[in-house]
Amino acid sequence: MKRHYHWVIAGAALFTLFVTNGITIGGLSVFDESLLQTFGWTRGALKFRDLLTLAIAGLIGPLAGALADRFGVRPLMAAGALVLALGMALYARIGSVLHMYAIHVLFAVVLASCGLIVAVMLVSRWFVSRRGTALGITLVGTSLGGFVMPQVGAWLIESRGWRGAFLAEGLLPVILLLVILFVIRERPEDVGLRALGADAAPGRPQGKESDPLPGMTFREALRTRTFWAITVTSMMTFYAILGVAAHVFLHLRGQGFEPAAAARGISWLFLMGLIGKFFFGFLADRFDHKRVLMGNLAIMLLGSLALASMRREAFWFFAIFFGVGWGGLYTLLQLVTVESFGLLAAGKIIGTRTILDALGGGLGPWLTGVLFDRTGSYLVPFWVVTAMVFLGMIVATQVRREVASAPVREAEPTTASN
Image (cartoon, rainbow, N blue to C red):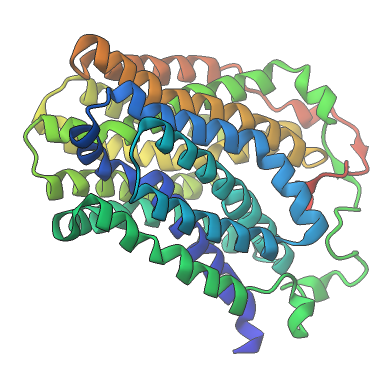
C-alpha cells in the first residue's frame, strides 16, 4: 500500500475537488427554485452570489498559493473544509439576501484554500513522472462533483426540505476534513517516499524548477497579442459556461421538467464535460493545439445555438455539444498557454489569466439572471451566451506560438511551480 501512496494522494485530491467544487459550483443551483419561492428574490439578486464567489476566489487565489508555500497545503485545506462545513450550516439558517452574500464570501475562501490551486500544488509535489496523468485524475473531481451533487441535492430537498438538505450536504466537508487529517500528507518524504519519478533525475532539487527552460518572461508575455487573445477567449467562454450552468436548472423547470429531471440535466452537462476533457486531450496529443482549440469552440458554439433556440427537444443536443466543448476547453486553454509562452513563467501567466477568467465566469451567472429579470425569458440571455462563444472563437484566431523565438533562461520563481 505504501509504495502506491502517490495514487492515494491523487485520489484524495480528486475527492477534495469533488466536495468543494461539487457543492459550491455544480450542486448549488438545484436549491435556486426553493430560495426564489421562499424569499421572492429576483434571479439577478440570487446569482450575484456567484459573481462574489468567483471574483473573490480569483483575487485571493495567489495569496492562498503563497500561504501554501509558506505553511503547507494541509493546514490551508483543513481550514477550507471547516469553512465549507460552516457555510452549509449557515445556509440552512439563511434569512436574507445579505446573509447569502456573506456565505458566498466564505465559499470564495473555500475555493481558494481547498480548491484547484492547492490540489494541483499537492499532487505536483508527489509526482515528477506521470504528473499529467495524476493531475488528470485530480481534475476529474470537478466534473464528477458537478455530475453527482445536483442529483444528491434534488433527492435531499424532496426528502428533507431545502434547509435540511443544506445540513445533510454539510456532512461532506466534515468527511473531507478527516481525509485531509488522516490520509493526505504534505510531501512524499513525510511517509518515507520520494516523488514518483524523482529517482530518474536524482540531481534535480525537489520542489524547484531550476533547470534552464525555454520561454518568455511574464512581462514579455503581457506585451503579446496572444496573451490577451487567450485571456479574452477565456473570459468570454467562461461567462458562457458558468452563465449556462448556473441557470440551466431554472430554465428546465420553466420548460416543464420535473425537479429530478432538471437535476439530471445539470448532471448530464457535467458528464459531457468530463468526456470532453479526455476527448480533446486525446486530440491535442495528436494534432496542432490551436486547430483543436478552434474545433472545440466550434462544437461549443453549436451547443449554444441549440440552447438559444429555446426548443425543449434541443436540450439534449445542447448538453452533449456544449458540455463536451466546455470540458475540452478547460484542458486546451492550459495547453495552448504553455505552448504559446513556454514554461519559464507559466505559473504567473496562467495565474494572471485565471484571475480574469474568474471575473468573466462570475459575470455570467449574474448578468444572465439580470437579463432574465428584464425580459422575463432566457431567450435574450442565451443569445448573449451564444454571442460570447462566437466572439471568443473569433478572438482565438489571433493565438500563435510566441515562444518559438524566445531564448532559454532560468525559470522565474512562482508559487505555481512547486
